[in-house]
Amino acid sequence: MADLTASHPDSAADDAQTDDAAPKATPALRSTAWFGTADKNGFMYRSWMKNQGIPNHEFDGRPIIGICNTWSELTPCNAHFRKLAEHVKRGVYEAGGFPVEFPVFSNGESNLRPTAMLTRNLAAMDVEEAIRGNPIDAVVLLAGCDKTTPALLMGAASCDVPAILVSGGPMLNGKLDGKDIGSGTAVWQLHESLKAGDIDLHQFLSAEAGMSRSAGTCNTMGTASTMACMAEALGVSLPHNAAIPAVDARRYVLAHMSGIRIVEMARQGLSLSKVLTREAFENAIRTNAAIGGSTNAVIHLKAIAGRIGVPLELEDWTAVGRDTPTIVDLMPSGRFLMEEFYYAGGLPAVLRRLGEAGRLPHPQALTVNGKALWDNVKDAPLYNDEVIRPLDKPLLPDGSIRILRGNLAPRGAVLKPSAATPRLLRHRGRAVVFENLEHYKARIVDESLDVDEDSVLVLKHCGPRGYPGMAEVGNMGLPPKLLRRGVKDMVRISDARMSGTAYGTVVLHVAPEAAAGGPLAIVRDGDWIELDCETGRLHLDIGDAEYAHRMAGIKPQQAPAEGGYRKLYVDHVLQADEGCDLDFLVGCRGHAVPRHSH
Ligand code: FES
Image (tube, rainbow, N blue to C red; front, side):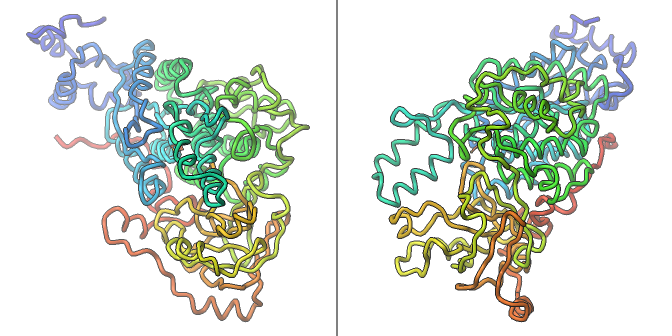
């Protein structure tokens, strides 16, 4: 029963009650180790918390629910998260839990230099230690902008506590001159139009406000939307988490319901490892093909799987994803935006379409609401066949991410066919080589550069160690002189990543990267390169003897890391095929309660 005296300024009555006995706690809850004893330690843990105005009865053994918040005004995509957290709290209180909101490092894609990917693992480390070190029984993860979703899932997975992910939701459709424009995608398109002389600087800059006109994440099927869909397909969020617009009241209802559900999960001990199974990852890989999702998902899913102990290899993307049609017609591959995706039925409608065709690999996979994935989606309404197409009228007959291998990428590379030009998916061309990003920037604008539309642009030293952080520059812009001639796409190869909002025939994540002694480092201007997406081959055609000779002369060059976190990162980051986690962070370290120090 509630102790109504505890809020009285004179706490004598409150003290008397705590003398009586320890608060009644459920032994299975972690938080009992903090608040469940009537000794000196219990006194200290409770007393300091009470300085926030928390009444005594809140310490009666109810589940303590962490709300892990990536709110930051420097992460504009997550800037509405304090309100989102308030709605989670309402749900937690309603279900009899005790919510505690806490901040973690927020890596915003748009502002953070050199790249938000550099700090994904830092944020994951922050999340893991914040959860394990605190009296938290279960956690709601508030994520939005690209890296925040994998970072929070990685950190929580390493603790294996009960967790629900609540995404911030996408922005409303961008608008320019009466037409819809998509986040990120419009930037690439407008910038190329500017370089080609099709629009002037005023027209270019006037698109800024119209592209980003509400709270939320990028409204294209970029990395943020992809990872929100991945969370839903993995079963770690409630149905419709991915697509409800950030400003739609139903986003706040979802947050509220997630707050209710997480309390039940804490009581049931429904931890992440029961949801994040091999089957869940296979569902996610198939879903990625159906939505035309970002190549970044390959790296992030591998990293999350590594944290929870699920084996996942690059070839799984071929084995599980191959021949899955892309049925979601969203930019950058298609026409529409996330707002229309939600109105059309959202991810549940996609999963239903896959399931009805027998294309959902594991319909019985458990989700955080305690039901099988199929039970969540089997009756999902579908309102628009243009946005979520039937499987026999897809946007692309095979939307799987292609895994390439060959002497240029012994440990693999990826390409997203749905964002590529079909005729370039099988191509042989001569290399035009850029040793690093600065070299590219200086050389690409050189009107005398020996390049034509059949050339293959090769960018080195932009991988995890080389940049460092693996920049999203793989979709490097085309030479202005070719743009002016109307060339729209060329084959590009690098050890970098690509924004999920970008497009082009772009080979990414070449592993090992140049800075780690990968063969990308030996490519020279004029070398012939062969790309064959059908057979998954990426070949440097210089002959075996010359190949061996050049490889013997490689001197790995990684970016100088002057110290601090960057040094830790460069010294320990794994290659792209391994998910770019730090080597010592891979794995689940559990949620055993650390011993106290007082
Ligand atoms: Fe944050 Fe795209 S920049 S979601």
